[in-house]
Figure 1 (cartoon, rainbow, N blue to C red):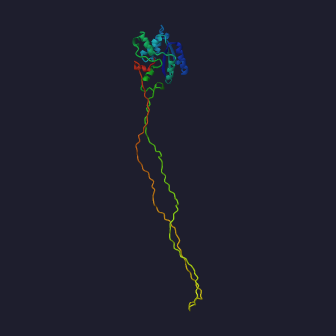
Figure 2 (cartoon, rainbow, N blue to C red):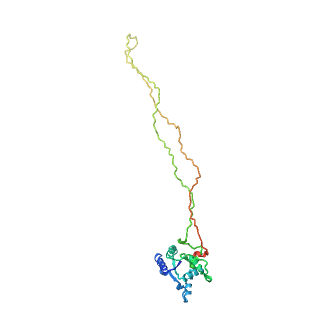
Figure 3 (cartoon, rainbow, N blue to C red):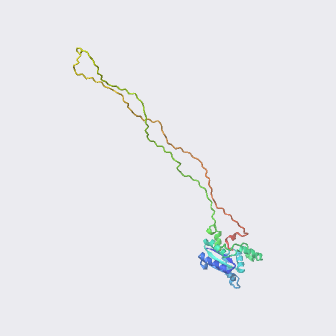
Length: 278
């Protein structure tokens, strides 16, 4: 929980701010207090008791001096305890309903001759919608282990370039073999033998002892050459598929983003004011 507060010139504005805080942030009414100048500057002994009860809302006496003057001039002081995550929304509500800028007002009061008294001399002021740190909250803000909320934190993001590599297909070579038939021709000389039978008319006497009157058989064998085809497979060429490897260096061009935060501080203020509400 943190405490946020603001001073209003008119009671109706202060009450409207309280109404919106309870409705929009679902706050219990007991978590919100409304103080006016009559409470802070009555002539009774309760005056000191009032300032003692709200003392924890100030990180220094300087703040008390500023708030004291705002109440003395008839202002109305709204103080609410909210969740850290509601800070931005609560800030918008107080500002929208007319919470005054105490830094601006203090300059006006000084121009009129107002001077903080004693130990309450004004050394710093702040806008009315910034959170007022209690003693516990101040300790947290000054502690390195304090975890900021989304409402008051700006992440600084920077991209880093990481170049990796992955294996991808770069195309392939496929070698296939298949059998084709091509008509061919060759010439060869073939020798042939032929048997022929001829009858020739003869008129002569049979010679003695010629023995013509007997059975005889004459046989003549004819031969011819034919073409015989044979094939011989011979390796006339070899196709070899092999891979070669090489390394190359490629320069990758890209851009990276990062968050740049610019802080403009035109205050003449104490560093301690960063955690206080004015």
